[in-house]
Image (cartoon, rainbow, N blue to C red; front, top):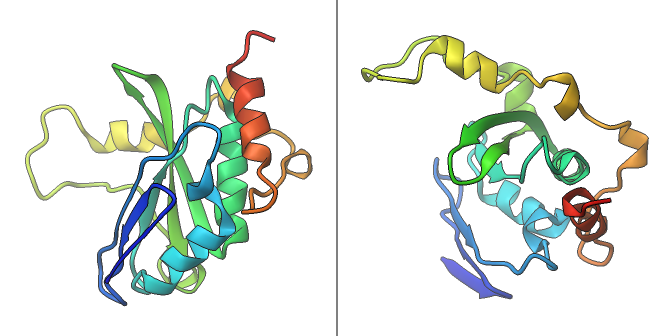
Length: 165
């Protein structure tokens, strides 16, 4: 089943192990981070499935990054944030979302071995992606709002984080 609305294409495969969600959303409409969209994803993600949300830079835009994390948690997912250096973007962050029921039985942990030979990615490198230095730590959670379809503080956080102020 395919759904299209406001610049999104969501291919839903009910209760299978994969879900493809592509978004082309203007910077001033972060609908992908809304509870409505995330609940839709959760309805179609397999119980043991994972989703990954590209979530801006935890270094340059910490309020934005951690607000996205809080929104995903409010949508009923256990979250595991991580970051890596992307040459064209700099330090960039992602959030793994896992249905709460499966996270209680099998919480996500970074891989300790790889089935394929890896030239640069090692378990030590993987583990480092899940560590956040002091300049990327989470702001006080009570100061961050959840992003919803009718209230989008992420727009404000994004502009504050990326401005020169």
